[in-house]
Length: 149
Image 1 (cartoon, helix red, strand yellow):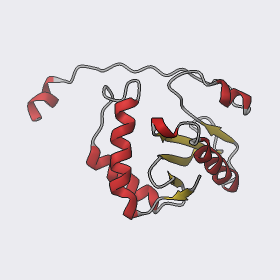
Image 2: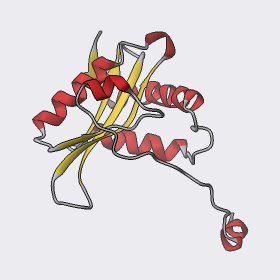
Image 3: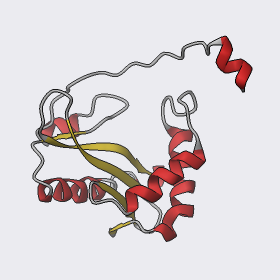
């Protein structure tokens, strides 16, 4: 298993992997998505010291993470934004997790936050605790917004 930092040359691969991620994600097709904006964000993340973009086995998966402060206290935390492994490569994706954790440790964060579509006992065995369960609701667009479109 080879995990490496993504480069701008990986943007076409990241585009493909992002499309696959959205297709298999429980709610991926329902959530807002602007491919051009996402690729621009990935491009910026690749060059950022506060973000991490990893590739697994030349296209078996990818991981995007970021360092930020919490709104509750001025402490650094590491946040997983996307963690995707192709179905045929499942199980190997923990190499991405391990690389993310090494990066987070090197950044001296106090907490690491991961999001999963369902409870994940493997993460609890690694010392993580369930913090929240997320919900989303699509709101009707205001008439002024629809008119401008």
